[in-house]
Structures are given as structure tokens and as C-alpha cells.
Image (cartoon, rainbow, N blue to C red; front, side, top):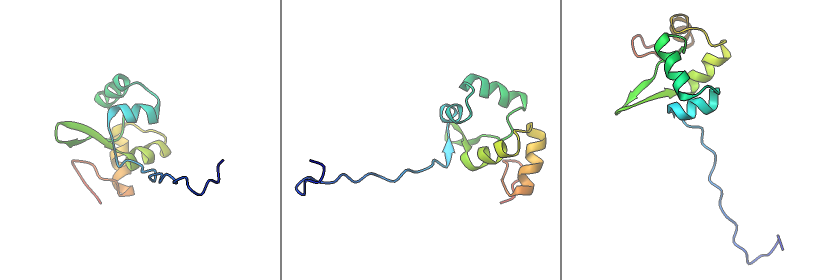
Length: 95
């Protein structure tokens, strides 16, 4: 009986897109393993730089999405592109 008036309806919390992603969430979103993403970041192949949040390194969701839309350029090119698009970088912010 789906329409039972005595049955309480559950409130479903709205889905929230996280603003910052840890390496595991980023691996799910981008597909490579966390180890591969760390190697790519160290080699300059991963454009977006992590943000230090306490002892954690986190990446901004919006910047990762913009980086993918731009074709996943190497970091040196992404930093220039990101500043033009208004995405900050720890060493040359433009917000």
C-alpha cells in the first residue's frame, strides 16, 4: 500500500556537490587510481593544484571540472588558462 495516509514520508536530503574533493573522490570522478593521480600531480600532468586544508590536500571540484572541459592540459598551461578563466592557483590567484 503505497498511498497509506498513516505512513510517514521520509525526507530525502538534497544532493550536494562537494566543493572540495579528496584524492579518493577525485579518483572516482576522473577514473585513475589515487596513486596514479599523485604521480600525475608530481609530474605536472595534473593541472589543478591541491589546496592545503589542515593536513589534507584537497582539490576544488569546479576547477577539476573546468580542467577536464579544457582537455586536461599539463599544469604549466593550465595555470595560465585557469587565471584567465578566474580559477585561482595558490601562487597567483585571480578570483
